[in-house]
Amino acid sequence: MKRKIVILFTCVGRRVSLVRSFRQACSRLGCQSVIIGTDTTKYSPALLCCDRQYIVRPIADKGYYQDISKIITQEKVDILIPTIDLDLSLWAQKRKSLARRGCTALISKPEVVAVTHDKRLTHRFLVEHGFDSPDTLSARQALKNRKNHFPCFLKPWDGHASLGARVVRNREELKFYSKNVPNSIVQELIEGQEHTVDVLVDFAGQVRCVVPRRRIAVRGGEVSKGVTVKNSLIIEQCKQLVETLAAGPGVITLQCFLTPENKVKFIEINPRFGGGVPLAIKAGAAFPRWILQLWMGQNPRISFDRWRDGLVMLRYDEAVWYDK
Image (cartoon, rainbow, N blue to C red):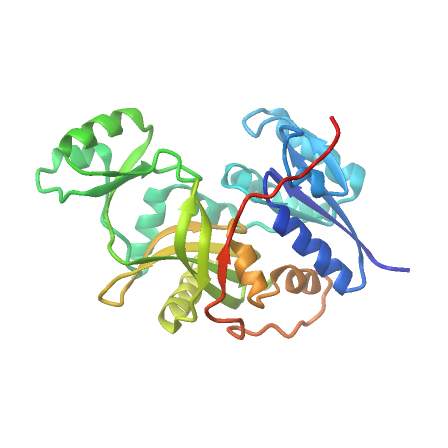
């Protein structure tokens, strides 16, 4: 009889490719998969690609955890995979209690999630541990500072999906947007090539694979065109950063710039699968299969950097159809 693995994706949204990748991984391992998705609306394409779909209350609602907890018990969920930033803090707090119920959450410790959620703390952590990061000020500090260099970059310290993020070109724009973007911070505008980096961390906290992806085009905060880049400097610094932070298990997504001076400057850390991770998976970093093997206690042959260099991803919209 095939081993059954029940996987729950929270806030599954548009993660069709990620859902399919885990389904394919289960099949390749000879396991029966039950893929469960949750969302706040039935109009979610990835939800319709799951074996079982649940409509739950919004994350901000106190009943959200109750909804997910009930599903975990009812479906006997083995692995929980958060897909967006908004509920990471919740699952970080609940990771131990979920483990006692037989459910493994791919989420970092609460203190790690706290650092990554607050971009002010992220900047402080990076600087204190010797990693380059753009100069960062609160909006109030920036307005008081007459030596500001424009253009600069304004964004919420607790933002996600690039909401509220924008280039500010002069003091008048800084005044306007700092009033209209809640919890805003102002950062030095970095010149260079922006990269998103996927870092696989096993259940023992070891970094097992690092895949940088250069961003060619971005839509709604998520990469729409990208290319894998086997840059040893980026790979090594990302490995050191994730180890220093003690993030994981699962895939940790870093954002950084490679400057014209060949320096790596980090801007964000997301302790979850990034939206562009299908590129890394297609390039040969078999994250879903490796994660499942590690979860089952196997010792997969994970190659740190033997993935395809220079693979380009050009994403496009695809439809999911169903009768209302």
